[in-house]
Structure formats: structure tokens, C-alpha cells
Length: 218
Image (tube, rainbow, N blue to C red):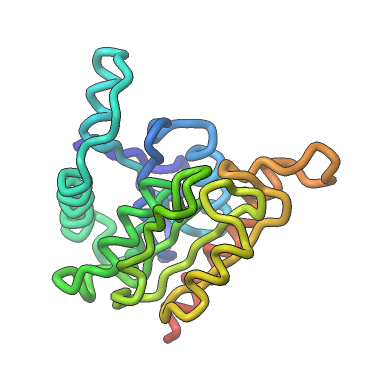
């Protein structure tokens, strides 16, 4: 397994976040790097990895769809197991990801077999439903969360906007929603906004850090 760590973010005593990529972009995409760097400034060590289908694309350059969900989850579990016995095993562990990667992390946070292995899960741009298909929600597992879960979502995200999300998941326990004003699925703001994408990513990192601090106190 190939693991990426943020430069300068693998020292200290702060939390460790395993961060999975989205369906179409690799672990070293611009978004993933910027988010990891912003988290590192908060004292969070970020470990990035690639699912098998993305690792194959890196080898041969051919785009392919994501692996099926069971294989994605199995691979994520393997990464967790490796980190738990590695040099960062004495640090508090969180899991998370961008879009699809965040969804996989949320599914693991609802799996009772893994209870206690990590302190919480963080989802950056959660794919609540496919764009334009609000009848296909991906939240059935939310009531089974055994640890705190944070979703950081742009208010313009076509995968789940504030009004519909609040109506659908308002009663879910252990779930915390945080909204980035004007952000799309990649936290890109409107052109007229004073903030840049980097600004919204930094906001997301700050929200993530606060969430982890609170999770460790509870």
C-alpha cells in the first residue's frame, strides 16, 4: 500500500486523519493537497492513500470507474489497520475523505465491527445524492453512527444543498453539519465572493480541527 503524508505534518502529538480521495481525482489532486496542507497548519497529520482502481490508473494512465463498495471499504479497513500498528499508532485517529472517500468513511463509522478503532469521521463534500437525482439519497446508514461525524458542505453543492439536507438528516444523531457559504462540491466560491477556494478550504480545515478537539474531549 502506498501512503502519502503531508510534508511537515507527521510530527507532534496532534490527531491523525486518514483522508480518502473522491471518485475521479487521485490522492495528490490539487484539492487533496490544499486540504492536507491546511490541516497540517492546524496540527493535524494527514495520511492520504489511493483505492485500488485509482492506483491502477496511476500505473497505466487509463481512467476507470471506482471499485465496488465492498472492495473500497475493505481497502479502507486495511489502511486503518496499518496505521493502527504504524509509527503514528499512539496518536488519536480519525478517518475521512473527499466526496466518495468521505462516504466510505461514514459507512465505516456506522459499522459496529469497527467501534473504538477511531475517534470520528470527517466528510468534505458529502455526496448525499447524485446531482439532479434527489430521489437517490445515501443516508440510510446515518442513524447507525457509533462515533461523531462531521460533514463540511458547500451551500452550492449539487450533491446536497442546505434546504434538502436539513429536511432529510436533521434528526440524525452524532452528525454535525457545517456549511461553507457559496462553495460548490470542490469548495469553489462564487466569482463575486471575496473568498477564494483556498479560503474555503482553510475554513474547512479549521472546522475539522475544532470538531476533532471536541470529539477528543467528549
